Length: 244
Image 1 (tube, rainbow, N blue to C red):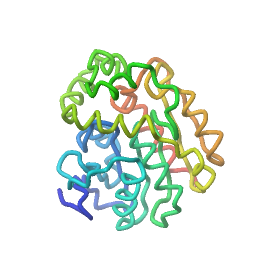
Image 2 (spheres, rainbow, N blue to C red):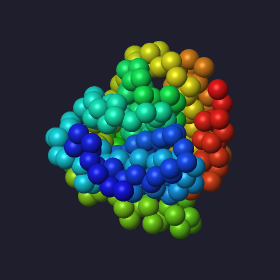
Image 3 (tube, one colour):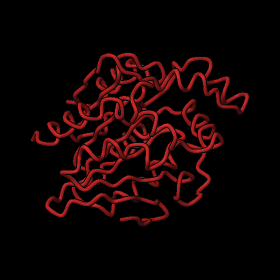
Image 4 (cartoon, one colour):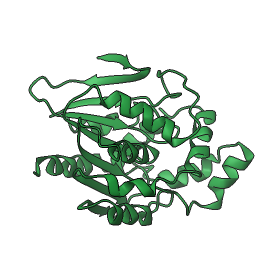
């Protein structure tokens, strides 16, 4: 099923036997296709795969800061009950911001390879922003896991360069560390130990800032953690959702 809610395009992979709803929020330069391999491993739930504003088939809202993405996702999930938010990279930052607003429909939060502030980016990220040009060699180095067929297929779904550059312009300015203490729902955080883009330190900061959150460091993987290790990640999410 495909549709739009408040200008946000989504694909719904439905499971009529459950009332558990997962909302997947992709990261920079991606769209709803990015986290589909992970969602297929979580087909015991209803899976909503969304396009952020200005991405994929969602409306053009000319978003220039993370708060505008947060507003859009908050409006989307307000229409859905029993939500577990699952965000990767910038998508995780957005989910963190939405969860901090105590939206009554959100029950749990999963943050993958993400952060509340990206203040230790490699200089190559700032060079991309300053030069308005994607350094694809560096991006590929950050993603890793190129021997994994699912990773290669997923990379082919990325948005055009101008979308990725717009998102990186947002990334370098992000700082929502002050809202972490507002989150009062169960939160699972995970990151690849070898991630050089959203380094593990960002996840430790979120672990310290979000009360009673759980952090899992996954060895031997970089930024493509939810795709390269989709079976393992999905099992962690299933176990997390079963906890009271």
